Length: 168
Image (tube, rainbow, N blue to C red; front, top):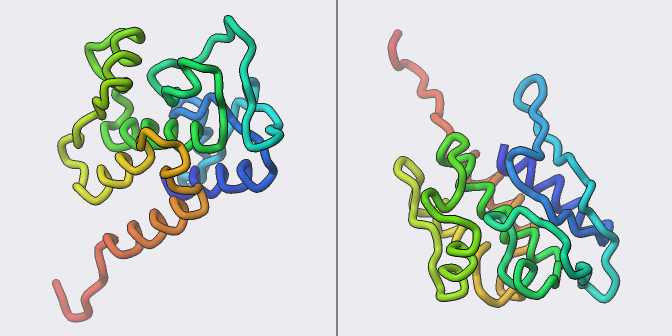
């Protein structure tokens, strides 16, 4: 699922759009677990790699990158931040991010460097990918193309492999 979402967002990135509302609630899951990025109501075409939101605009704070939530600066890299949060939703089977924290607290803590810990039963390597999505400097965050490739390789390498002769 994660690699399919990254692939969809890589397309959004190539088309020079920013989604601005990437979270599990906005992913459609169809037959055979085919995933599609949906709800483009907040999406915008970006010029000069940035879209500045008007004052008073409302966003899902727990999923929104600090530079976007605090200063209204949205880029594809702010969507990468949101993707990292979405990965925690997948790893926790839908738990709301930053449990026990209200929006203002999330903003304050994230600005001070807080990042969500590795969810239980989440491989450390996947949490490291989440942390790369949450780097303070947006330019240091990975691209969706990179995320797609990493996740495709990751899930291929961690799938249980058939071993001939077992359980005959």
